[in-house]
Image (cartoon, rainbow, N blue to C red; front, side):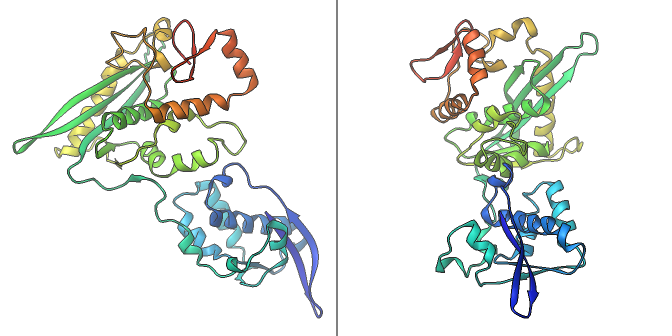
Length: 361
């Protein structure tokens, strides 16, 4: 980010100060036009120590206000509030100019084809591959996750479940297709993402419509996951985002994930499917493995298919194998040392590191 503060004189604009800075890891994952919004806010903030509330005109080559309005759905609430405060300063005026300004030369070389463009056209209406509307004739699934602490034992129990709707004659039949007990380190959000992952695998090669009541899941699938991926799954402070391994696996090819209302007490198909998924997830959590059993289950998960084959290593799809390898390659040196202490081995078939005694990563 670069900016030049000037003062208008009879001889033209006289430079007073030069500012430069780096985009934070989160903003690096956004579209360049949204980065222009962050740069505009940066310029205004940096100049306040000199301007001191006097009238300030910011010349930019982008339609910053248009970008801001279109980006509210993808920006965090904190960023939106901050930008609103800056852009609404009474003494502040924003002017779009198509001529080359001094700050442009500090940021990147200028070419003729960069001068005139439509900022709104550069902001995609929908970057996600995940649809928001039901897919006609698709496999209909309902997912949910549950996590609670037993008041008597103090142990956390977690689980996930998938419910499928099938049409038989003139009626729709709901069937529980998977109940997944999870180990105690899975939070409620992680359990819901596990349910989504299992549902995507269940609908692999098919068109699927997945209903889920938590906004966290639908927001993650529609936009957040692609932004996290582009910024390397790092938060603004440079630390890795929680559930990074789960997010990296949720990259569907053809699916719609739709948020449904919870606990509506209605009798329509979506409401009944959501209620059954919620009940099935809680029942699965009640049978989750305790701490002494956790090491027997790959990745802390025990699917119904693994109950009789916990000694076997996990079977990943090719896409999942690629993501797991990429995540392991990004491990820090002290993490690799810890793996060595726990006896890690690299599988000759998929090149994924696992713990020798249990088959875990």
